[in-house]
Image (cartoon, rainbow, N blue to C red; front, side, top):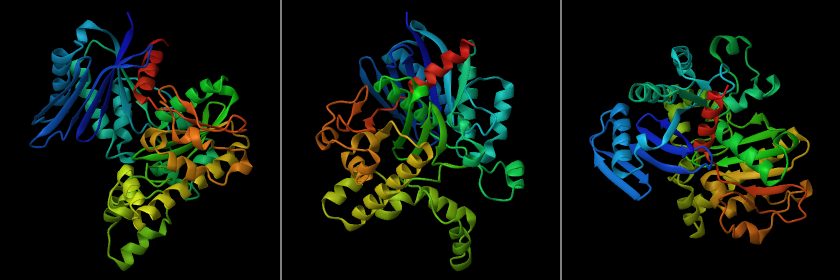
Length: 399
């Protein structure tokens, strides 16, 4: 019988869950409860017999997880009919304390709670998901998998900001990086497609979804990444600005009487593609661009130019690059982004095959979109963070 892990990702007003087959990487069933705490919540469960949806009030995360358990019972598979060995939890911020997944205990919960100031929107929700799941599944081991863990191999010169040294000790101000679970999975899969050991290859991974990040991976380890102390830094994203002059905060405080909180919210929730076009969905930006919308064209150009800058920077960091990998919603589905981001980089040994790039023919296990003779492979690999969390949960249990 295959081993399974129930993977839980608790957001501030949502709960996402997947029952993962740790051997195949398949989601036996999955679901999402949204708008928790509102007058009407939405719950969709993807089971063996199809999708089931339900709209009714879900008061809190405990009620959401109870609804998920009922959905498993009603629409399958019943949780007591499969061999569940652990519950794996996504935790956004592990600070510099967690360089690998860890078994959940009271000390871990206290440590994650201490890190709330670094991730005030995410860690409290992650903790609530853990506490609820421990009550509902008291006989199963629970494992926390941290988004920041993969980036704990960054050297000091890569994670240190040139600010007063006391800021690091007093306030934890440094680069942490995020999307680590995705970057770890995708870089490992890239090595597999190249038929090489991860310890032998250098890869630039571009995780492009509503949130976007780039990571330089040398011999299987993250050595630089675009997101910083928070997920705001780096690439242009759906609603986040990415890199910008830090003096903008002070300037807006002086000339527009904006508070730090107002500017912070605008940069996280009202910027990026949304700030430039009014929408954060890249598919809508693409449709508007195709119709000749000038703001959509500018947003596309800004987005891809930033990508190209990071590819060049991380090429310099790594010295030699074996592959550039695109993943997540935009990375996997936008041939135009891949082409624009790599345009003009042929002198670096990056040769995109236009036909392959335009028609992937299905990329369940990954696909090459570079020419056969390209010194640097260009790959499109679907990320599978849930499988990575499940695998890491099992690894923790085997220690």
